[in-house]
Amino acid sequence: MSFSCLRCPANRRSLDRKKRVGAPGMTYQLLNQFDLKPGVDRARFDAAWAAFGAYLIDEDLAVSVGPLFNREPQSGYDTDDVRAHNLMAVIGFRDKAQADLAWDAIEARAQPLGRLHAGVFGLVHDPVFTFWQQS
Picture 1 (cartoon, one colour):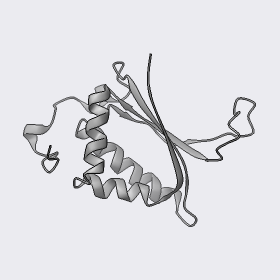
Picture 2 (cartoon, one colour):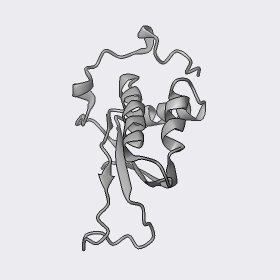
Picture 3 (cartoon, one colour):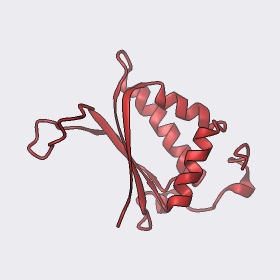
Picture 4 (cartoon, helix red, strand yellow):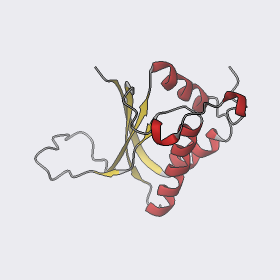
């Protein structure tokens, strides 16, 4: 499958972005945990994340791209002694097919998605990803 025409009007769905963000039909989620590389400004990362997330939603490759969350490791709720990541975000997918399409497009480095993904990935250190299906 070619991903060179993701922005072509014929390949786009006409769903309103507000309807897709936090959509109740979301069944798969990807937790992204990471730290920023030394010297990376948070505002720079926020801009890269926003552009990447907007593209995923605009191209119907995700139903939601959550905001960045700061970890609170001192909380009694946080029992993860294995990872020390400070930032996390969740990307939601309608179904496995949508998640697989996003993965395939990223792996193919389809443009402009490849550039947007590299723009995010190049700013993070030690990323860990957890993918799950809601039950």
